Image (tube, rainbow, N blue to C red):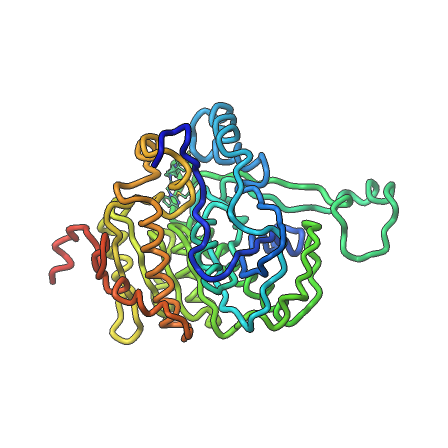
Length: 403
Ligand SMILES: CCN(CC)CCN(C[C@]12C[C@](c3ccc(C(F)(F)F)cc3)(C1)C2)C(=O)Cn1c(SCc2ccc(F)cc2)nc(=O)c2c1C=CC2
């Protein structure tokens, strides 16, 4: 890492053979709709702009609110630092026509939103996947938005449009901020309700990707001119998996229990608290738990072990020298001093940590989606064999587990 002046902080580009395209998709405009940042293998040779990492100012004030620091100060600080920051993808580039791609649905953590795991999503897409990073409307995101029809009389003032689907000028933007659980109330029912809503949103995202694969005409509320009919027959709907970080890890497990179309899951530092007993009974699919060294605690690990099985592959590894924030993008975007101060970096180099997580994920996805790639070269990582990884957990578990 050069000195702070010469250092360029950036999200690493994908290591795979594909250039990565990116587009935002909201269908329909209501709070029940899907809001996705799509990463996909794209054609090379074009000259496409790179999209903003955090595309709207409102996300910064949402983050400031979530972080419970001085809202105006953090809002200003984050905007000043990251406001013009772009990610290494080709915005609105045409999909690379190369048969059917396996599909990953990605679920963000508490206080995050759809764009903050771009390093992982870009790497997976570069390896030949379509990745749909959903934005949850369960009030767990730092901020998110949807639209409502303007009251009818306002709309009548405008050109009375005949098209059934409203256009942006007839819609009102509505923002939802992060909602902390009310102190003094039970946190479990609140988070459990959210994890069920989050799973439904992942299922609806798969329904939307299924519509896109059938070539159905898609009305993208976000008036970007991406032609989704180009994705007809490009998604292998028999090879669908779900990934998520922290609350998103719990969401991945919940979704696997609800919808058999998802064939396996990768839970990155899962937060198991929101899950109910029925979910543990319902999940019958392979799961890879990739844990950080510092985030986990005994009860959370024991909840993961409740999913151990002799018949269904359930794997757990821990990447040493990592923290909870080693998975989201912020781990790349601060110098080591601030990074360690805010708990955004561990002692293991951030790129190496995410690289290990990505390789273990790809090996697990190849094994359980039946891919014909070379990701099986990283199979040892799934068994906790390799630099900076151990099998299972680093935690000294409760004596209970000895019996
Ligand atoms: C005070 C707020 N208090 C609320 C419960 C705890 C806040 N907190 C620890 C934080 C997030 C932290 C963070 C981020 C980002 C900067 C920045 F400066 F770089 F922007 C700084 C400092 C502050 C590390 C977590 O919630 C940890 N966590 C997360 S963090 C997901 C996330 C959020 C925002 C991001 F920008 C990136 C990633 N996702 C989960 O699903 C769960 C947990 C805990 C249990 C379940």
